[in-house]
Image (spheres, rainbow, N blue to C red):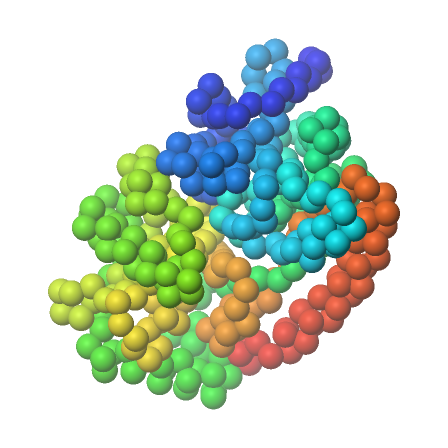
Length: 373
């Protein structure tokens, strides 16, 4: 095997998209176009506290490994919460920021963070990124939502693992939506039918729009809803219309929009990403409050779409025990952490051991309340 050559880059401009895609596979959130759009439209950029410091591995000039890596001066947009750790550093007179983060910005989707052609190169990346963290003199290094292969490599490299939970829907091969409902307990099935009836009685119908079927007007309506959702919670949106326009222009087949209409007037929408055999629920918004509309637009319509097209899994995004009533089940997620200060590392390791035991118990308890027969 030829010698590995590591380097740090602050842009994907000089990276061959085809070579990147050979590493990223069919997860749309890891694609060259998705990540480059985040940077190029200013969403994940130094001015927003996301400074790209990608770690790349070449052999004979060919890209064999990479990590989406950022210097962060805050913990926003991550979906794995370390605010208590930052506060503990501050109370002890130490700086927590900048920290080093391997993640897809604003995207709580599990996938590879050690992008590599081989397991050997994956293990090399796991060790090399520790050296990067030391060289940059960061307080800590965090890898968010790694997949199972990454998790094994990170554990072997000495990272501490942290367990979380999301809610995912699995398709065992339902023939149609009615077959899916037939798998529910009677009272849970009745509740879904009642909720769907309320939306229908409000005069709402739905369209599923994918790829070229998504017009510029629909995309602008989606974006106005996306912005209003953030504003309703007192937050500024992370992403711009230009970002979504870039996705629509360069990776249209990975977009699916659920559009709720009354007559010809749109009233709500949800944007999903599709890649491989998985659909990822991402963003939603509405112009009015209708009972059951959120569940129907974000989850039930997505499941119906997946069944009709034989898609194997729908990931409903971060948080949300309420998703279980629509057939999404508790699913463990992971993050991996390294802390430079040994005292804090030991304290966090003890905390994580207790937290993981509690999380395992919590997931087991949730699993007892799935709506299925």
